[in-house]
Image 1 (cartoon, helix red, strand yellow):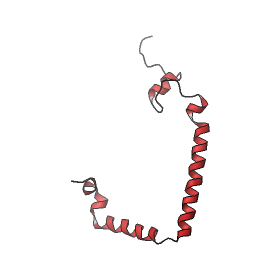
Image 2 (cartoon, rainbow, N blue to C red):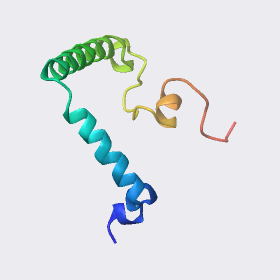
Image 3 (cartoon, helix red, strand yellow):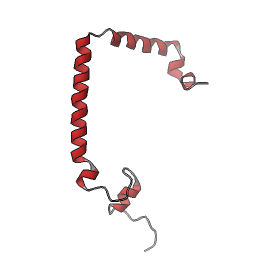
Length: 87
């Protein structure tokens, strides 16, 4: 059985109708709307990448050497709580 076959919303005829209706509506948008959408998406992506590069933990030096971002190891290596139970 495929993944979509196990999924409740896609397996129903109502779910398929909703997806087809959305595709129909989006497909009938004028080209100028698509051009504006792509332009705003590109601007947002550029802002996101520039902001992230400048304010990332790696750029600001908050990420300890050897730590994996977003893990408890990062917190421990950066001077957070101690993992060993020995005094």
